[in-house]
Amino acid sequence: MYLYIVAGLALLVSLIFSREKTIRALKIAARQFIRILPTFLVMIILVSIVLYLVPDEFISRYLGSDNKFAGVALASLLGSVTVMPGFIAFPLAGILLQKGVAYMVIAAFTTTLMMVGVLTAPIEKEYFGLKVTVIRNVISFFIALTVAVMIGFFFGEIFQ
Amino acid sequence: MKQSAIIRILVIASYFIFLLFSWSMGFNPGQQIGQNFLSFSVDMLKILPGAFILIGLFEVWVKRETVEKHLGEESGVKGYLWMILLAGTTLGGLYLAFPVAYTLYRKGAKLSVIFTYLGAAAICRIPMTIFEASFLGIKFTAIRWLVSLPLVIITSILLGSYLTRRGYKLSAEK
Image (cartoon, rainbow over all chains, first blue to last red; front, side, top):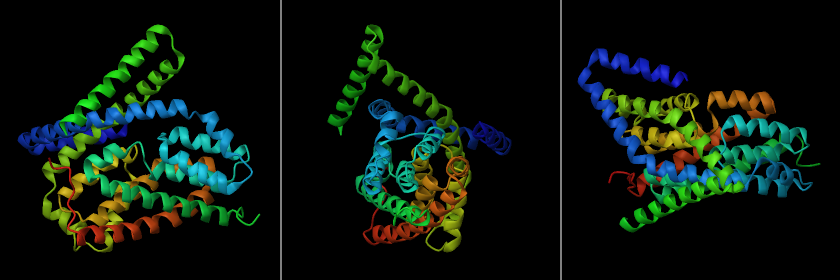
């Protein structure tokens, strides 16, 4: 909500200084918004289907396996192909933790969720091109794996 | 280009026909997908217009020289700090960071700074971090930040200089 307070105030200040520039800003906003809208529509469609195919119960059932490294591998793949708002992802992570899922598995899931976006790739590609999109996501995937390993190390899970 | 646009329209149309069909026939999976679609659309529509208004204002008011000075080739360490601060206050997710990053780039920010912003927007958003720490503990969040943020900055610099050497230009101008 505070986004609209900020945007509203900014518009007001802008309007005070220059009516003409404010109108130009709104035109730019509308044009960019409309241009990217079809791509967003495709992403939302993909997300709606994936979220149905990979529900919360599926995630918690498969991440709790005894083999932590298999768990990390699976969690990072799941996190890469899923898009979830934080207010769903972290409570879910909390539940997983209580169910005995290792910290490093959770780290692999939440970090890839945040950094790697297979479903947001259409949008990314629209702005940055295919090559950069692929490179950035691959790098992000390995950063997420590193985070998972370090979390495992500091929580004493790796050498158990 | 034309052909892919047609395919995209066909896919979108058949998706909605499927939803309509599921809804009228009481087909459960289709109904759930439809609900997912609605709740996500509402989420996005709540954020996107406000964000694009801010992007528009930025385009109009902020001078190219200002961005170049603070985020351009000569910007140094401060450029990265600015980006991490901006990323920390970014709302939504990566999908919103892309247009912001693109706008900054067009105003003269250098590539490594842009990639730092994208990475940091994924991992350093303050509201999300608070949420994470309350469910997984401060130790978890602290380790994640300390490991991921330096890696994001280092890889951004490497990727930025690689692409600059190759004469890369962002392709969205059509």
